[in-house]
Image (tube, rainbow, N blue to C red; front, side, top):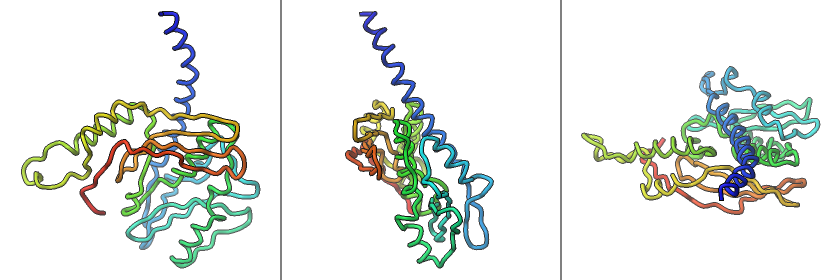
Length: 257
């Protein structure tokens, strides 16, 4: 029995090491995203160039490649009550031209402009993980006001999961004094919270002949915590499909921005 346990541990070591590599990548990018700040110029906010550089940012994705003759840029779209970055791709020599708000918004949302449509994953587990993260989470930084309703991040370690759950426990503690009648900023079901504490948040990746499947835990900060599974084609156009989504925790917010 002891030998069987030892053999199982030995066989699991490569899987554990791989999973840690996946999580290290995710945490490194999310740490960079969290460090990005805004600064005010006139009546608008822009990305603070001292905290964000698009070349540094894209270099973190070392297992994806940018389409030949294209370069990736970023434009911060500030709409007063909300704001968020748009990663775009232009051919070498082309310049990004500012427009009025409506035409600028339409331009940034064109399929052929979006950076995600001009990158390719290396044919490896790391490549498809980074590709998926870029496409689903790549613009999750410097969100302003109402844009925070759509904020989300990946939980891939037990330590981070415990940190998130402990924050919810604080919010759900009984209030005293004048605050007793106020709704907490975030409310969750404590039974769901307890069940969530028992899960393994490890990122899971499975490669088949035609697809790469990735499962991870998404914290959609103003909605809930979900376990999601994505399927990515291993050939161009590298289409991404979400094939399963399970809500593990519902989050109710008690405020408006």
